[in-house]
Length: 183
Image 1 (tube, helix red, strand yellow):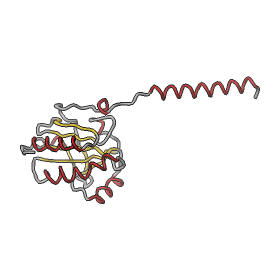
Image 2 (cartoon, one colour):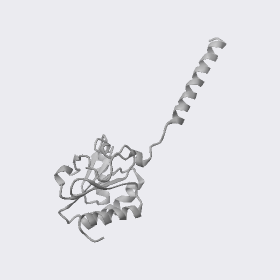
Image 3 (cartoon, helix red, strand yellow):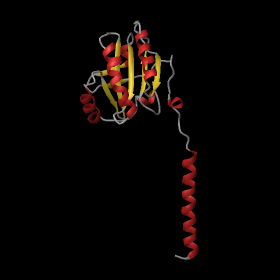
């Protein structure tokens, strides 16, 4: 290799690294709001999925019910923080009602990962896995946990991202109101 050939190679490598750095620097991060593909008041995207127990959860068949749809993952710290509250403040409060349904859909995880997690924590509501994000993609492009409350007419009456106690309490109060209960 001659000096000029080596210099040319070095220049090419440095140029490539500079371009890679420039591209990485111009990559824009998406905010939770920009990643949300739905709006309160619109009809909910379709959900038809098998639960871990093998039952079919079909949102279209649940008109007349208030439905909480939770997107989460076992590896997500805010999701794990929220789960006990879903159990005690939502599931235990509303599960005896015929006009309330709830499902947690794990994003990009398998049955083999989610089933032992649910069993270990003793969660009692239906869970499903969305291994390819096909259901999640109707609602958002990024960020979990996400909660959607679907009203009795099939429209979204609440949507939230992340877990904060105050916002969670507002969601629970909205569920109660949609079911005709006092908060």
